[in-house]
Length: 426
Image (tube, rainbow, N blue to C red):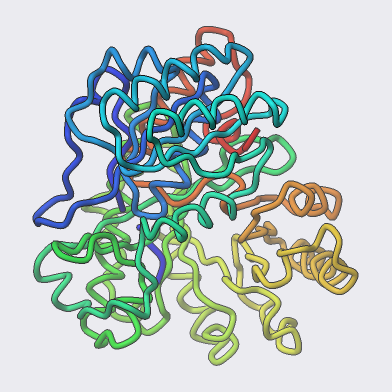
């Protein structure tokens, strides 16, 4: 079941506020991101937040110093731009403040410039990590967090009860952008469930879903649908009408009163695009007749089915033509490396063409590399989703990002849609 959570990056004038997780003593790691490029700051922040690290963003070292944050970060990402003096002043200020965390330099500048800043930091007693050269991929950020033992614990290390999480209202829903690959515009979002535990921090579904009882799964499905409807309402108030996707098993779908839920929580805008419900291919092929019946009932309430992990059960794909799916999501094992892999590329092309023949949109999930996204565009894939375009983020952060982009576009300085610019790592 998909659906996600963390706190939004505070603006520069609010960076002095200490970030504390809701309802417990667990201290969520904090990182400062200092870069004069807004899109880079947001890109790095999204990756960090998706890994359970709170962030504060600053345009330069002066903004950080002026804000005088009350809480010391565990990690500082510092861009070294053309004005090397700014970076030097920042590391000196961190040294004077007795900063004991790690400093991660990032830049497109030459090695000599980075080495100058690194040595200056070491002279101030700072822990200077190896420089991160732009452009960089999302895996580079995760590697840094793993080495520093920051962020989300591996799911296998923490196991909790979904029933307990529901009872204590620990569940949160995060949103990952879905991008129109041709227009390079925000096309929708997918909701992911996260648990904010008072001792363990942010937990992924691997920590609370494997042993979940059926009643809890149905309750989670209902909450994810209500959450998506409410988020759609919040977005519509901003003049943004996005189709939000949620994941739920077929067994839960047969038990939910969709009509009552939608009537109680849906946005009233005439152009409300509705909700997409993702179900895995494996569940659908087991009972095509049931899937077809569910699709018809859902359509009465502007809810549409999408098939997840499309392509795994290739021998059964033709059976799916009977069901009116809005989207078919290519399995990430095929998407990963499709820009160069001689096996994955033709599989992706075949599945995309098959989705189109069914009258569905093709969605490439798990995108992390620009070459793979470019390959999918050339194959005719409609929508892309993955860390290349942003990790799942709390609703507050998602809405904040939309507001920021809308403000910039209204000023006539940016033409890209919300979240599309944040996709660019450098």
